Structures are given as C-alpha cells and as structure tokens.
Length: 302
Length: 302
Image (cartoon, rainbow over all chains, first blue to last red; front, side, top):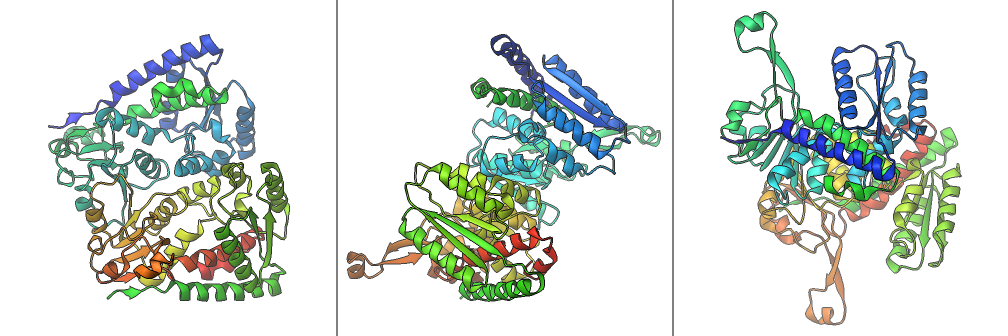
C-alpha cells in the first residue's frame, strides 16, 4: 500500500515554522507581516474560508484584517478599497475572496491588486513572472503540492510529471513549478487522447480536474506519487444516509484503487487541502520580507 | 518521404496578406502600422537582422524606423528612447534587438517597453497574458511554428506535442500555444530521462534546443510532424571547403534521417526561420489594430 502523504501534518508544521519566523521578524526587524482578506457578499463557503484564513493568520502572529462588504457593493467601492490596501504599509498581502457577485468584473479587481501584494498569485504579472522564472507570488495550491512532493521525493529532476487539468489556478502554474524543478512535464486535459495510458507513464501524477474519482487505480504506474487536488462533495456511501442528504468529500482520484498501486498518495481530505492556507501565510511572509529587502529570511522555506 | 513544410513560401504569402491589409487600413482608417527597431552597437548578425526587419516592414507598406545607437550608449539614454517610442502614436511596435552590450540590463530595458507595443512578446506581462489566455503579444518564432502547424494539420486537438527545449523565447511560449490549441503538451529538456523514447511518442515534435542535428531519425514517430526551430552554423560537408572555413546551416534535427520517417518536416533553412520576421510584421499589425479598437480586422489572420 502507498505511503500516505499527510498534508495536514505538513501544513501544521509549516504554520509553526512561519509563526516562529514572524515572531523573529517582529523582534529583529519590527516587521509584522499583514494580510487583508476582502469578502463581498454572503456566500456560505466563502464565509468559512475567510474565517479560517483570518484565524490562521492570527495564530501565526501576523496582522490580520478582514473586510466584509455587502453583496451590493459597487465595483468602484471595491476598487477603492483595493487601492487603499495597496497603499497601506501595514498590509503585505491582499486576498479578494472569489467568487465575486456577478455585477463585479473579477478580472478588473484582481488586476488592481499590487502584484507584490497578490498573495493568491492570480495577477497576470505573477503568471508572467512564474512563466519566465522571475521571483513572484505563486498560487497557493500548486505551490503547496510542490512542497509536498519535494518533502517526499527530495529531488524531482528528470521525473515525468503528468498534470491533469489546465486551469489558471492549479494546472498551469503546477506545470510551471514542476518544470522549474526539472521534471519533464506533460499537461493533459479533456481533449487528451487515451488519458489512462498517458497517466500510466507518470512518475508524478497530479489530478486537478474537479471530477470525483475520475482517475482510476489502473491509471497509476506502480510506485508513482499521486497528488490529488480535487475536493468534491458526493452523496454518502450509505444509501440511507445519502437519502437523508448526507455527503462525503472525495478527490479527483479513486483513492482506494490508486493507493493500492501508487508509491505515495495524498488523501482527501487531509492531503493538499490544508496546504492552501498554510501557503497563503507563507506568501504573506514572503511579500512582507521582500517589501523590506529581507529575502534572506526566506531561505529556510525554499 | 515527408512532406516538406515550406516556411519560406508561407511567410512570403503571409507578408503579402499583411501588405494588403496595411493598404486597406491606411485607406479605410487612416491607420499606418509603425514599427521601431532599436539596435545598440555593431554586432554583425544583429545588423543583418535589423536591416531585414526594416526592409520587410517597408515592403509591407508600414511605417518603419530604425534607431542605431552607439555601443557606448548608456542604459539611461536607451530607456529614454524606449519611453519616447512608448509615447509616440505613430509607433505601434517596438523591438529592441538583443543582445544588448554588457553594461546594459536587458531585463530592465525589455520591462520598460509598453506591453501593448512589445511585438517581440518578451515582456513579463505578455508572458502572463499568454499563460492565462488573455490577448497579448506572442513571441514571433513560436507563433510562426503554430501557424505552420495549423496550416498543415488543420485542427491540433488531442495531438500529443513534445517540445524539446524550455527557453522563455521559444520552448515555453510554444508549449502554451500548443496547449491553447488543445494539444496534450509535454515539455522536455536536458534533464529529461530517455529523450529519444519520449520524442517517439510525439504526433508533433518541436525541437528548440540549439544543438546541431541532436534529434535523430529514430526519435521520430512514423508520420509525425517535425518542427525544427534550430539554426546552427556548422562546418561545410566537404572537408576541403570546411578547412577553408566554409560553413552550412543545420537545424536541431538530423534532417535526412528524420525526413525519411516523419509525415512532414520543416527544413533548415527555409522552414521556421522565415516565419519569424513575417510574424513580427503580423504582431505590429495586431498592435496597430488593437490601439484603435480594430480587432475585427485581424480575424483573417487568426
């Protein structure tokens, strides 16, 4: 059976290290990293994410501000808030929680964030920096996946990584990061011919498609490392519980089948999921250090 | 034997179509696309390129300006020129010929070019636009390769494309373009394990490594389309001529061997090479049309 990559434990340890570094930066440099999270409207899932982000930022000893705006907020007012956060020296990271209400142009709002404070890494300038190999802000989820892979495998050089999914948020930046780590990288997607056969060539298989249990056990090469980015809510296994509306979370990988073949695998939940907020904190720390020319402080997190 | 993809003829036809569109834009919209090329110093190869660019821009009926600066030009003066070209409404495309003298920071100069006038597509904002799928300026050589592929194959959907080489100028943007065209895309490089076997899985094989005749015939899947981006100068075949310093151009692909196996192949010279300047003209046309909201004029070149 595969080694289970414990993202929850890794994320907790990472948050500890970030917290220690934050305390250190405050003492030695008077620098308290600050994250501003902006939530527009009442989307229940977003409420939970934003609360978690605020709590974990606080727990790491950072300055944490959450702006909760009414669903009717105008784009102009939201942009004005972003501009004021761009100018605020106590704020090093800005995260505008998606999705935004339909009357607001999300692209315009994301484009207004100072790229150096764009801790989600969604700004086009950060996509460009990642593409050409310049330091920038890297999207949290793929960066978290890379950290888990490096922790488990050490060097990734020469491994064949297959990334299934080509979103701007996960698949494409994941491919860039794996390429920087000297993997041979294949990006597959809905138009790929014979996806199972392609996946079977992967030393590292990253599933980021948002389709429950799509990747089957016989798509996995024996010994491969499987990273499951999917978080899908499906009916509970027990028919009675399902009929009562009970649900469970599954990934994009058929876990039991894949775990029987893989060398290592991330579970869902408890694999990639917990890394996202931990890396958000790391990105905030990174932005804060860079704002003061303290990149050397980040060496231990590389 | 493989079909020979005649890039020289395709580029000539493309320049014709661009010329016709330029004449049309001048008549109907009073819009004359303008390209400024900046050359610093006396590099002989750069002199040739810049002269060719100027001549072909002229031939297409565009406004063409070449700025030749001394090798001793300061970075400050070069940046001042770039800023003045950014502000010049008669100039829609700006190309700073590389390499620049060692005392000038090329990245700083490229970053100073207005991304909307960056007809080389090297600005980080354009790398980002390409990565996330927004309209931008795309590097000329990979865009030229894509045009040759679409012309030969029609739809590229579901084809497995292997790009050998991961430069910011060719390999990485080539991979992005092939992904946008719905290929399954693998990026290979010097750290790739068993490169020959990987290349043999390619329906489309793009060689962009700058190593003479590295890709052998038995790396090519029968029937594959081979795009050879390399232009390498090697000694002439005839030993006496070679001894006398005679040279010849070869690609990154061992042409005779590969042509015996491939379904189609670009020769060197006369394949990808002539496309680069033709696409530079197309990018200038694109920038000019966008500057006036005339994107619809570009439909026939898509």
